[in-house]
Length: 170
Image (tube, rainbow, N blue to C red; front, side):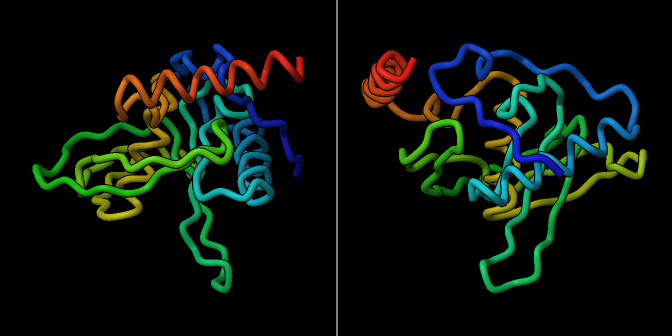
């Protein structure tokens, strides 16, 4: 497994929509392993392929706690097919926007359809943190960042700060 470099705001790749995974093959499985290794190293609870420079509709998630056994999950071509009317608010962060957090309101429950690494289609109901994390990562696959769900003023400040950092380091 390889730890891949993370794509950081304001890189325009983060705004690119990802293409579907066509076949579940060795390359997709290796990318899944690399993404999990990268996510654990960061450390984070979710990672979209676009965040490591791969514009594929693929994401990894592990909501296990520090003292728990790891519970890695891989979702290919995930699609939200239903959402609840009830909303919940979580403080979100993003590996591509380091050290910035904001409260985001999203549907509390979703129904998800996705392709698994087993090559089979799956459908699953998710609530709470899992639903929030899935929606956050699926947004990445569509070129949407969690800061797009906060006020324009706050978003502009964040983008300006990261643009300034990128200029200094680039």
